Amino acid sequence: MNVPERRSRSRTPSVLVVDDEDDIRELLELSLLRMGLVCDTAANVAEAHACLDRGDYRLCLTDMRLPDGDGLELVAHIQAEHPGLPVAVISAYGSIDTAIRALKLGAFDFVTKPVELQALRELVKNALRVDDEGETAEKPPGERDLIGASPAMGQLRGQIEKLARSQAPVFIHGESGTGKEVIARLIHSSGPRAAGPFVPVNCGAISPELMESEFFGHVKGSFTGAASDKEGLFQAAHRGTLFLDEIAELPLAMQVKLLRAIQERAVRPVGAHAEQSVDVRILSASHRDLAAFVADGKFRQDLFFRINVITLEVPPLRERSEDIPALVTHLLARFAQREGGTPRSLSPDAIDALRRHPFPGNVRELENLLERACALCDGEQITAADLHLQTMPPASQPSGVVQRDWATNTQIPLHANNDGDNDEERSRVLAMLDETRWNRSEAARRLGMTLRQLRYRLQKWGME
Ligand SMILES: Nc1ncnc2c1ncn2[C@@H]1O[C@H](COP(=O)(O)OP(=O)(O)OP(=O)(O)O)[C@@H](O)[C@H]1O
Image 1 (cartoon, rainbow, N blue to C red):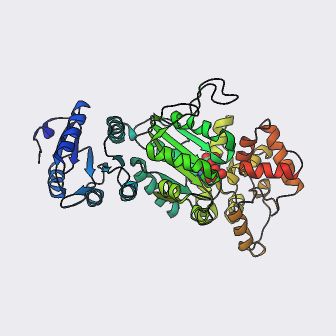
Image 2 (image 1 turned 120 degrees about the vertical axis):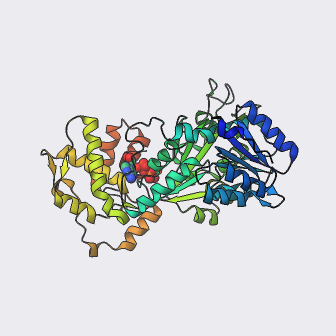
Image 3 (image 1 turned 45 degrees about the vertical axis):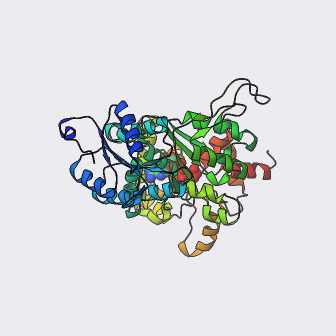
């Protein structure tokens, strides 16, 4: 065991390396030294415990198989006794399952053997940035606002704070409009990658033919229309986060390629010969039940395990109606900031009406509804009448029907009837398309539906 006294005197970040193989310990120590880091080494779990009791580390790197225990035990021990210390595991090539178990236990990241210097560098940089920048990085106002003090949101906030430090893939599950993207941005902006890019991609909105090129880029002339080299979403998200929204919509063929890119941490642009390594954290989201998709053969199980290391469940707004007043205040302030002027307020009867509303389109529906009320109301205060809520006495709204709508995701947030085919809906959709100059993705987003749902409706109305 090598625990030099120098650490207490030096401000240089120190790393604890745990591995039973002398040459690997030496190699890692040398590599870390070259990065300007001080290193202690331990050859087994007992030595690692002794180091941890004495040392003040910024990162622990541990092998999985140790003579007196395993790396997973050490990960669990560090989570319990040194919760602020990022721990990364070194896993044997091909043993991704064990690496995933380590991530689930709270490991920050993993590298595979033989350890590549570049991968090690990225990992160490990310780990050290947690302390250096993660807490203080500048964040654009509004982006990190996750409003809501309900117990469910409190719990979610705690999970987000923990997950932000880790590099583990997170799958965010929740109905449309519940704030999945807000959460993904918050995980990104509260962690070590905050200074890097956050690249959101709606997997349901990319045409299958262009998908590979969108994700991995292409080289000039690789197909008709490839007039110049183009970088893909993975390269754009290098050193940052790639947020795969609506991941269940990915075609199976693309799922295979995505899995490979995630596992290898490398991509090959269409038409290129060489792979490019990418350092990207993957966050994903869907309103679908992915496990059911796997059971139906619509989603690959191996990809499911890979992206679903940790799941965050975002509760629908109707299950946390106590959050509505704070959300209303926040949203009205946001509108006022955007348009200039003082924020509107809501009368008590309007708040009451909102709290009784089922909100199938969740926070996005609330946002749309308040935006419309602000546009239509002349006074400073918005009343219940200004909200134009459909009056639905609780008894007349069979929960089963609403539930079925959510599950099949055929709902239109602003009170369409169940088949979605009425004049009010049609004029609302058309007005939004006009407003967005027929940018379908943007219109769908603002209406609180997926692009597919919008297309389906346009087709039904003979407009596409
Ligand atoms: N807790 C929250 N606090 C503040 N704003 C929120 C919150 N939840 C959602 N929003 C707002 O509601 C809108 C929808 O949120 P977001 O896009 O994150 O939902 P989503 O679950 O990703 O939706 P979809 O599944 O349709 O992509 C955004 O404008 C977002 O700012």
